[in-house]
Image 1 (cartoon, rainbow, N blue to C red):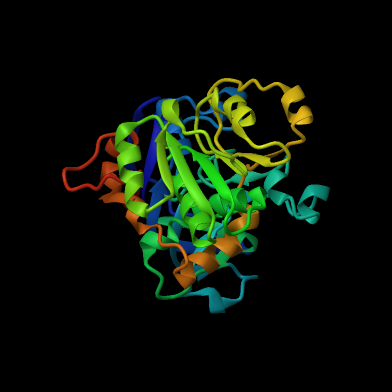
Image 2 (spheres, rainbow, N blue to C red):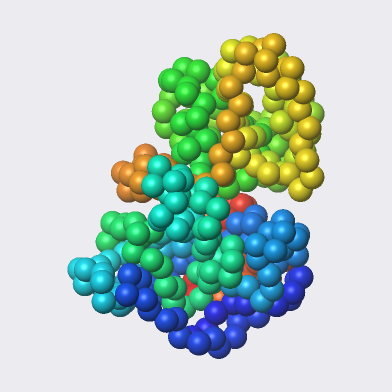
Length: 335
């Protein structure tokens, strides 16, 4: 089986690996599409924190935004799954601990993470084995481009839900990348007034096409009452800026993770009576993400700049883009 393997910082290639071993509670899936995200790029560059903590190590096989079709099932799995179009949760909890039993399996201390943690093989490969408890069925006729966007949409949906905003409220989103724009599209579909903020001129120009109420450079944000802020950036300065800008009594949602500590003054949180929420995983948002993508409430395809082959994975991870490419932030792989 062909799979993309990273063997060290900025060193990766497609190699022949052993066929996946199917356990009795597993499904074997032929991968149809996989997306590349910031975590994958961090692994490729050798910057991902799990490499330093020992939760991941080279060689590794990345890819956690994916969709595909079930081609075989383990002996304990209902054979009706064969032929189904599916995706899965990234976070694979032990299913035994208090966190897992309480619905927080994505925070399980003993979890695997598809293409991320403890060597669990990812979806930049022809096939993928996934435990049955983590699998989510997709509509049979769903475009694979959309199917591979379920995971990031789940993250974005959780972030927007955490704002607690209603139609007519004003939301400011730092970061016009994939997650930030998905947050913006979801919020816009709910009648929320959306303002997107960024630092890169090209990404800001791209964001203009969606008709948001405002698209602003970070150095020139107009004064306005802001009912919630989502930080979907890697900028260490953004959380403190968000606390400064937000209307008292409102909410700040943090979904981006900076490479160095983001320092905030907790007194601001108390004195402004703010609610600050962190979003780690798409897990609790996957069902809702499938619903809004299936219904057409949100169409993520304009965010996809290009679909490339498995053999072009290193170029995509290093920032090289093919000639026939759009301006969107997302690159997908077709194994």
